[in-house]
Length: 119
Image (cartoon, rainbow, N blue to C red; front, side, top):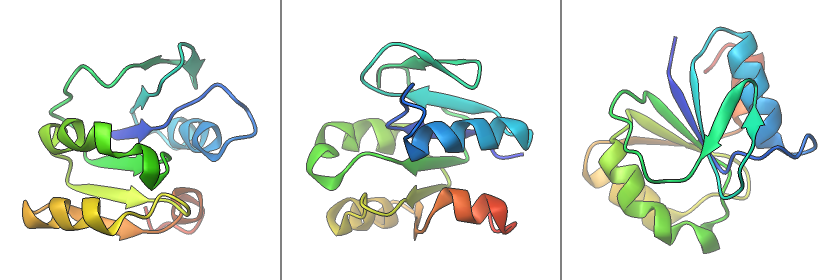
């Protein structure tokens, strides 16, 4: 199972990051929720982007490109194997930075990937 950090986690039940957190847990993946607001999703607390997790396989991005710059160092220090840029979060500048250090980037929908066995 791939330990997944959800960047842009929220308690808002209508948001895709909320749906993905629950789907990942149902499928047996462990998750880390990172977001701006306090709360809990899928039984896991939402934390600020402060603690560097060194065991992350995948970061799934739910933050728009206009708000991603403050997270660049956090993502690079976390050093995941890959970052999935969900629709609306695509960022060629960040993708280039990640690929330069050997972190794979994917433009796709994590929910679709989970539903089709491509995750």
